[in-house]
Length: 60
Image (spheres, rainbow, N blue to C red):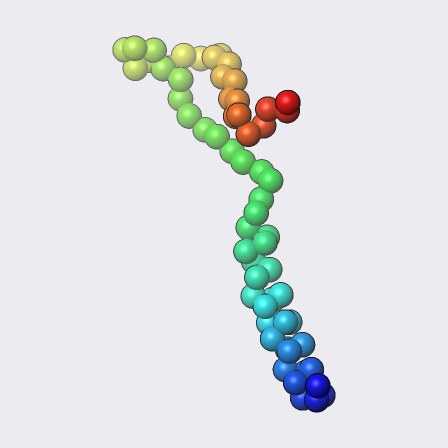
């Protein structure tokens, strides 16, 4: 393989790495949930605890 082809492939690989970096960085491990807990009349319920679960997080 010629040196020109090697440089072209290295350049393309570098562009792919640089181009895909933002997509990889977007995979955050953080999350935030906000909301309001209310009763049937719509009044806010202060001091309420809420527990969130997910089947994907269950360890067998």
